[in-house]
Image 1 (tube, one colour):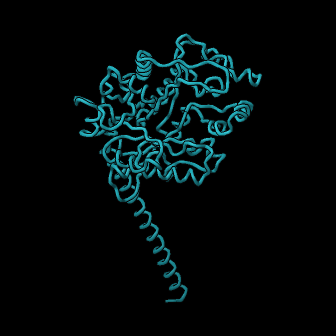
Image 2 (image 1 turned 90 degrees about the horizontal axis):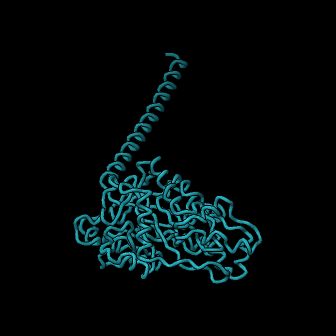
Image 3 (image 1 turned 90 degrees about the vertical axis):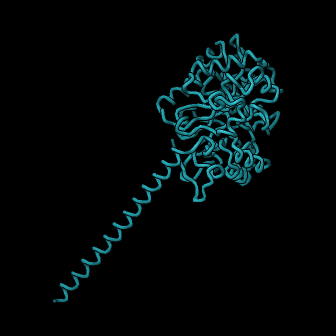
Length: 390
């Protein structure tokens, strides 16, 4: 056999060997990919709501404050100015990113027009509301804004607008991971400006708030305390005995959590033991019949307590950041504490692609650019996290 033929045979064998190796590598990759998908599908089919961790935003409705007003506030209190100098894209845009936790603040305005002439416009001698926004503020009903008179620009001025945006997005994404909405009622004003004083919510106002949510989202879109309690005598007994429902049964729905002070929470549960017939969960201390969803905002100081409550079966919401004056090293420490605590809902102003993440060079997001992952504390998995986006 000639040297040329022999050389050609060797070259052909090498080529075949390379192709075989590439084929084997490709086959192994495909098998691993299929196996990983199978594990994820199995996990999703067998897991419950508290078996996940999700990332969401803080004061999700908030728009950028005008620079002139920010400078005015800084003249009175530079720390306050720094801590409210953040903003977000629309609720829909945040949900499209993958966030599955939002926060909304509401204020009473039964007669309409209470917040339609903010002091900030007089202070900087410039209109800050367009005609549509001003007309909306003149309507009767709950309003959504951060601080009356100074920080009032919102992506949904009317509470019903916020709810309708949530509903529209949900209808376009019917199999989405359940979204937690944290709701605050605002009853105070800024001390350094003359302006309107917000009204205090009564028991009837809380019932009207519940009804407004039910009117827009309807029963089939809501995960309520009664749904979780079932036939058991208390809400706490239900989550500690039966646990939370499967994630499959909750897809396409919303869970509201009332973030109130002790007076507000007591008024909300008055005549509604275990929050029966109420729309929202609220953060009550373990041992009380209404305890199921806890708000524990400091994952560093409360790390052990959060982990313990998660292990016991409670849902916990915490904050990966709460002070915008912190540096990135401080933020990173708090973020990791929030992740490692097992808290199921993690709020931040620095989620990936938020305005704050671009200006700071810091972001809060799980690996593989995901906002949902399995909770290793509740699932006891030792082979790392699974990451999801739905």
